[in-house]
Length: 279
Image (cartoon, rainbow, N blue to C red):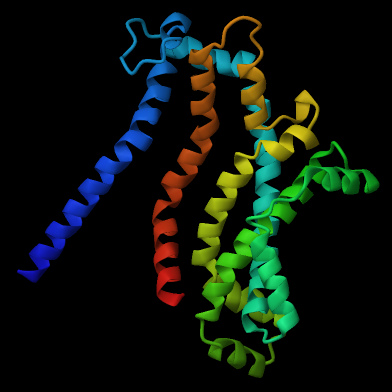
């Protein structure tokens, strides 16, 4: 009886959450998808009706031919992959150090990194520093900015996770002669994998969708990431905004994230669950 009530309560809760999310997620998503398959005249009205004449193939072909999609996709991958790899590894190592340290100075450094999530880097000093390093307007400079502004996410999430892990395995490995690097690489990093996987998904979303820094630090069209390509494509018309092509570009820009999340869904949920149990 108790099990049935729990299942019924869970079902009702999910139904209510779904109904609550429908107007905020379902309707905008439907508007984007349906208008991306309409001709320009129909899409300009921004309605939720199905198109009377389907222009799906023409619209998405225009994204590839006119929207510079493939080059922008390559640039986004070129920025996102090394950023996520470096931030994850450095953030994991820093989180291990913060979690095991009792130094007040390191605690101050931890809170400073955590605050970096709420206080984004200012643009003018960032550009000045990149110019001093001869990295202004380069992809490497932009990647370094992404690393510096996103590492606080991994440190904040992973530190609390590591604090919930027992230190017995680390002590046993040290007794067996393992050095600090071996303990981190062979023991701590695999144990931190669930929370690092969740942090990686958050990093993908934030780095992939960055527009502010990319607009100022990636000035040439050949360096444009997908958000910049979408903006250029949407504002390229001298007359009216071509909503059908803009929506098609939005779908194609978000598609890699959707595919990545579809494959990583179980790992993300598992990481969140383990983090909640250990936190």
